[in-house]
Amino acid sequence: MHTTVMMAHPSRSEYAGKPLLIVVLGPTAVGKTAVAIQLAQRFGCDIVSADSRQVFRQLNVGVARPSDEELHAVKHHLVAHRNVWERYSCGQYAEEAKAVLARLFTSKRTAILTGGSMLYISALCNGIEDFPTPDPALRARLTEQLRHDGVAALATQIATLDPKGFDSLDTRNGARVLRALEITIQTGRPYSEWLSHTTPILPFNVLKIGLILPMDSLEQRISTRVDDMISRGLEAEARQMIPYRDCPSLRTVGYRELFDYFDGRCSRQQAIACIKTNTRRYAKRQMTWWKRETDIEWFSPRNVDAILEFIRSYSATELELPPRARP
View 1 (cartoon, rainbow, N blue to C red):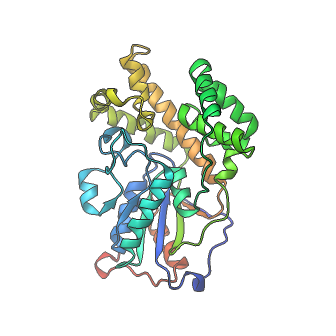
View 2: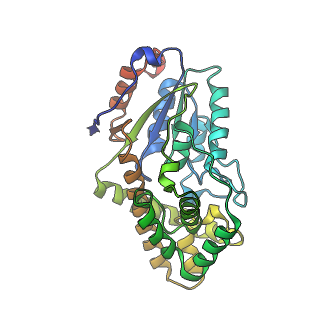
């Protein structure tokens, strides 16, 4: 499967002179890591992660961190380099990713960026505006409302004030919902508009490859992956994270459902079922976000040859496969 959308691709002359960042994106469990590794091996380059949870060294099974074998096959950057108790923003990520890419591009013409964190990819490729400093009184009022009425009450306000932003917002993540509502109220400007602005001029070209599968196939992959996570020790990993459960990094699908189980709010099987349901919902939010973008070319993760041909056809950096890697 190769889905072509109307795109404003740069001409070959516009590509000339700059290195190329190949972005491999798509919904959770679609197979981004495997495709990114194949591309990196073909082009002899490194991988930079764009996953907002794989950055934390204490999280492994529950965030589908690449295996030791995969990490050894290709050099990965921005994986397991932060602690779960640290606050880490998409702005911090963008600065770190730019620094890594600057180093990589001193010796190579290509790098792979892969992950499913929409804000991280957008922050790096599109830039972000400087959000206003929080208003203490407004923050206190919304925090109290969140505590008293729950996240659904704040999400309802976002749905009214910023319908576009609501569609791609994790409405179970209280911190993100609060911040989106806070910015919208404080500035009188929808949160989604703060994330959509003129793209900055980057010192590298960006080519976005989207991976997609039929929804029934993706849902089966999600179910299988969750079962695999459970068999590999996700429950034990979540128990180790109980002291940090209130950290933003642990407000994550896979952990918060197990915390409910540990608290006696549901059975173990109900928690596992909720992980699968919430992962499917997250995948749909990811696709809602990316469907708005016009610069993504979509492929099946099974069709790496078509992806390679597409990269060659739009790259003016004269990328060639290393002789040993030619099919």
